[in-house]
Image (cartoon, rainbow, N blue to C red):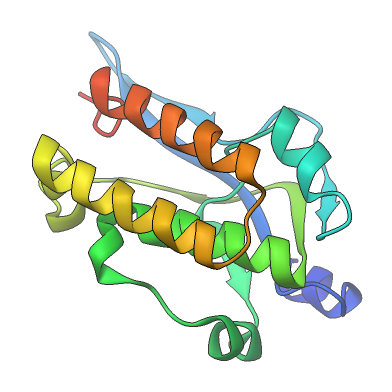
Length: 168
């Protein structure tokens, strides 16, 4: 369905579907949605980026996004210096510059490992701060709204402080 939705939305660079993530309970695993608000299906462009991102900050998951090759070529690929923030940065940049469409359907179950290279590096405060600095500098260079730089930075620092990068 993501392919047909991307074909329908010719003026966007990618479509993103909901993602489920397993969370450990004492006796079992539960699946919970991440990054979406129930019933939200929205088209994002440079025209409404400010209003959308003032209300919703975490809309996308790279693993459940279908991105046009040309959009990647024209906006650059992932920046390894951003560590685990590189995919979220790239999707925000694509939505600002080329538009995006968030689909209210589930696309995948994400089974993230706490031992992955990128996540492990972000658990290190020095590496986290270095990666965040690269993201913020890139956002400035790529003309993200000034108010958004502070919001993104604050949110990522909360993620780091409360160890929300990982789950048990």
